[in-house]
Length: 225
Image (tube, rainbow, N blue to C red; front, side, top):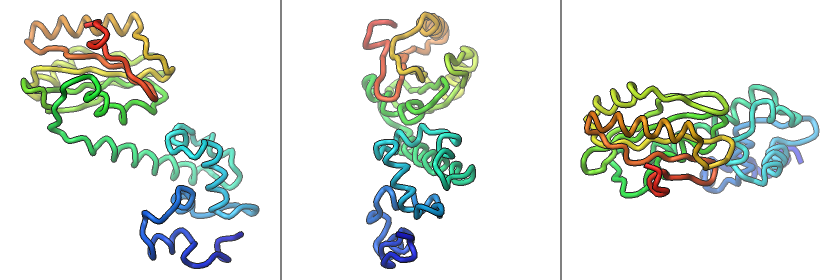
C-alpha cells in the first residue's frame, strides 16, 4: 500500500512528529532515511525487504557496500550513501559515549572502548589507548590503516603520541577483517618491538588486542607479552 493511503499517524515522518522517535520500527526509521521507494514497493515495503535480507540486523546492514545496496530496485547511489552514512553516524556516536577518563582494569575494559571503532571494518586499522599511572585513559587514537591483510604501525609515531599525552602505559589494538583472532607472526613481532621500545622510555605496553566482529584476543590474557 502506498504511504499516501496510510493513516497519517502510520506514515513514518508524521508518526515521528506525533509519537516520537521511539515509536518508530526499524523499517520506519530506514524508510525515513531513504525517502522514497520504487514503482512496485512503497518506501516502507522496500525498507522491510532490505532489513529482511540482513536478518533485521543493523550490524549486518552496516557491512553492505554502496554496490550491495544498489542491487535493490529503487536504491540508487545517493540513497545507498545516505543509508551507509546514517549507520556510520550511529557507529561514531557509540564510540564517543566512552568516557575519556575511563579506568581500564582488564582486557575487556579496553575491548569495550575499541570494539565500536574496529569490529565492522573491512580493512585493518591500528589503534592505541594511552593511560596515565592510574590506568585512566588520557587519549585514544587511530595510528594507521592498511589494506585487507595488514596495517603497519610506526613505532616512533606511537611513542611520540604517548609522550605528548604524558602517558605511562599503552594498549595497542588492531582488527582482523578475516574474523580470525589468532595472532600472526607479524602481530607477535610488532608487539615485542613495541614492548622493548617502551622499556627505554619507561612506557609500559599493557596489552595488544586483536578485534573481530564478535570476539577478541588479548595478548596479556594469553601470556603473549
